[in-house]
Image (cartoon, rainbow over all chains, first blue to last red):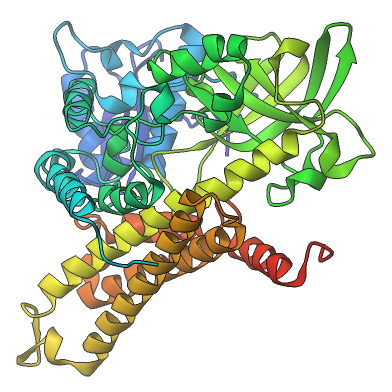
Amino acid sequence: MSTRLNKEWLSAQTAVSQLSGNLGVFQLADESKRIIFVGYAGGKSRFGLKGEVSEALQRTSGAAFARWEVNTAYMSRYKELLMIHLHDYGQLPEANQPSPGESVPGEIATLGQLRPAG
Amino acid sequence: MNLQLTEEQELVIAMVRRFVREEILPLELALDPDAEELAPEDNARLIEKTKAMGLYGLDIPPEFGGPDIDLVTRTLIAVEMAQHRGGLYVPCYGTFGGAGLAQLFEATEEQKERYLFPTLRGEKKGFFGLSEPSGGSDPARAIQTKAVQDGDDWIINGGKLWISGADKAQYGLVFARTANDKGRDGVTCFIVDTDTPGFSVRRVVHTLRSARYATELSFEDMRVPASNILGQLNKGFAIANDRLTKQRIPYAAGCIGVAIKAQEMALEYVPQRETFGAPLSSRQSIQWMLVDNEIDIKQSLWLTLEAAAKAQRGESFRKEAAMAKLVATEAGGRVVDRCMQMFGGLGVAKDLPFERWFREMRIRRIGEGPSEVQRHVIARELLGSSLR
């Protein structure tokens, strides 16, 4: 498995039509295919990736593309993707950054540092 | 061995049990089923509570500021702390604190100042770097990471695998071969800062545990001062071995706690659930599962408390710790498996904690030395050290 999520970007409309209810991780990108959000569909999601990606596309300003990976180890993969983004760009994707005064989820507050091989 | 708990032990256990039920379980309802962390504000609030309870930093020796609680009582507390969904690997989500790397209590004064005390204050984290791709159960032979002396420094090359927390650590204990022909007497423990040039966390290793991952490390011409040797040159294996033996007791206790919780849930469920016009509890097949669970739990608990009692008395507890680890991890798996069976479809759904326990309990038969190695350790204690 590649460390980075290298799957093809799909337009928001195509993504929503193809998604299913599996557990897994996903990324959203803007028109220039710059990653702006990393998310996951976990055990509490009602409709898995289909539900989580659809909701994230609606609430994330500028989201135009999505790609995903079905993965039951969604939580560690989610953290890995965030750490890789931190390594590559020095900051979290903009829609993952907490707003002022917003509570930071535990899994983001405790992120580590990677120097990925590939 | 006295199996009657003291009044003080009863009080402490009741206090921890209440903490789990009133503080941890409500928060857990809102977390992802695989979560391993609380929100920072909840974490800080609960740490204040465990400090007020006098139970923060349980495994820190009293001379370094920890509560002066004997190992048997700490084992009983560990059993209680594990009785929730995340309890096997993150009992109470870490709000009771930890001792960090206990090996540092034996460090030099300078090393204590740089690593131990900041760790106890929560300013630094460390990792334990023993296992390698070549194996983890027989570190004396499997360690291929090499350290070569260069003036007052050592140059380390190699890598580690299955290392927890290295990506979040400021330093770690890295075991490297410093003498090629001496087997277990040729391994040295180095304290390595993770910002040392040549140190890399190469990747995350995904496992059955969805939230907590292991990492793979690489060391390329990593220069470490000789003053960062922990203990003596070529005597690192004793440090590793001591840690592996001690760790088996809390490792077993966590499995017992989860098994107790699973059994408690099953005992509550089977009288209510009806099939073919009668409650599940009226079926002999279910009754026997509950009976087998109870026996598995008691055997594991008594073996683990015996190991803790011997360790507390300062006696050799290598065999007892291995037996406790072996029996508790295997029994814990059986108990969770039977409970899943009793709950049917609900047992495998993420609505309930069984599926997480099932996955994590499977790892317990491998982590900290697999069952086969524990049997080998016990056999060696029975037959003598000539057994290789």
